[in-house]
Image 1 (spheres, rainbow, N blue to C red):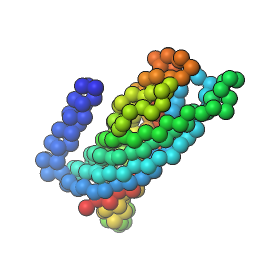
Image 2: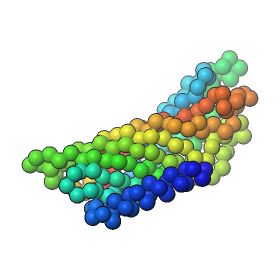
Image 3: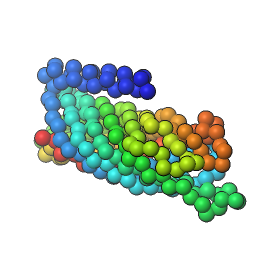
Image 4: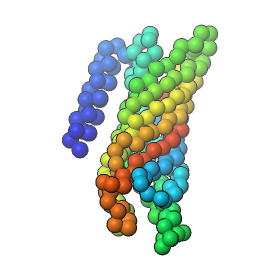
Length: 205
């Protein structure tokens, strides 16, 4: 956990340093939907995709002239998931895991400058780490997840009239989030990674 905190602090300092160096700073509000899928290794369950939502605030630092940006968001995120067990003695049984998170995605973004229509529409690509900290305790006795989930986002989007940004990304789960699994399974041998799609709209002032 200390390593994660130091990583976040280092990234924040780097972004702030860019802001001091005459970068263009903006802030705004952001909201969207997510669809996550828990990938479980070496098991025969079917994991249903489940929809959730996200909302919060974001900041963006843009380096003048070259289109390079850094953005950081602070989001309240709801992720829902369900395990449908297919073992003979548990067929038809399921476990629902609905959790709220404080999510901090930090992205490196590049905006493409289009001739003539650049002031109206600017496509962009982005990538970066995503840290999600679980709010509250586990509610299931036989299925528990860790407090922190780490993913790496890759996405694209478009900025309209210099203020509205609409983007879509896919988060590749990095760490094993399993803390306790049903059926006496070992969380270390049967790891879980949370992968998810996110679509958001942000308005920057």
